[in-house]
Image (tube, rainbow, N blue to C red; front, top):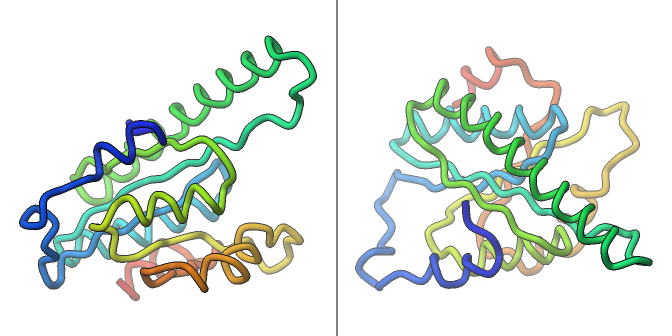
Length: 175
């Protein structure tokens, strides 16, 4: 896995290594434990499988809000990092089942939107950013609202928003 400190180093590539191959798309999927992430991963996997592309999974660990005591904050941060690694391990099984390819795994720490922008800027091979949209009856539009408001003006790649209510069959039919 790559973290934000390694990310800048590991994503610097020579000019010849980062030449885009038409049709081979690298999908970056922002993930968490919610169902819409799994649907977004499935969509990206199906698109990658059908185009000879690849999938990267990005999980951002946001700093704990409780910073009153440094030791407690450190424990909370460690637990959040461990949970992020378990999440990505779970998703790797799904990606392997759907594509027979090992996804790139990235864990970054910091503000969600800023880390997404930073990673897209660091990895010049990313062609498409994929996020899952919350179910229509949900009131949690935080990531989608943020992306629409802040990222779209700064994002250098297309953004694909995948509705959480799509079935596997619907995803297969559109990819």
